[in-house]
Length: 381
Image (cartoon, rainbow, N blue to C red):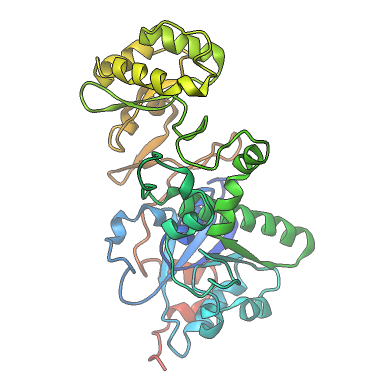
């Protein structure tokens, strides 16, 4: 066996996954499965990566292996179907109907392997008026109402990094759906299609907020609620050196500790009286501007005030808590987030760096018994 298929590398050791190369949430979902120990074979297309990023730096391809298949070549679909026949899971992120036109859709794959879990990752989903339209994270979260919750009330909603839609509402839901369907397939012998749409997952993430809205505990506007920056003891504040501190002192005992360490006297009723929040916010902001981020970090260190410094990406790996937990790891000279979550009996690790397109063809052909991968591809039709 190769390193990628050796038992003991996570709870999904022994699970085989085919990933049809794409961008964004599909590759990240496949990375999640790979981090958990699955043998993920990424089917790259000829001509290099879609976004022109050096494959050596694409961390979403770590713990995977890569082969190159031209799906537009006469024997291209057959090569993928050979892999699908030996796989537990296939993941693709094309627009609806594209995989079918290429000859590697669910019906084609299930004809070769009825137990296969076929995971589909899209923004809009497999059906609906927008299903065939192009889109990106910001448009998906805009329609679900989640983008409208973010930002200051007197400014347009900001363009957040694509973590909420692509990766939380997309990748995580695809991975969850695939694992649930894999459990069903192993119990019944029957595979199925998992339709993971970013709009569905992102909407689902806002379930608690919808409940609060229905109960009258949430206003449907930005900067007016407990968790959206409207509350003066749940938000971020600038420090004397132009950095920021994050405050989340929601409960009364944490709020009292926060005020004590900040150096503000507690004002009876100000915590729950929304009309007094603007004045309280100004007092808090003025206090934070009197010291640097490092100084305030020292003040709140070891307390239950629920205050933390807002770190940059490059700073985070050196934080003492994250360093102690090994939240970040180094592999191949690159600092990167370690696999998550943690497992007591089947620990995970970064086994290999980002897969180089086509570099693992020989090993995959041998391990998966797909000799056709080794023959030169035919000319496109």
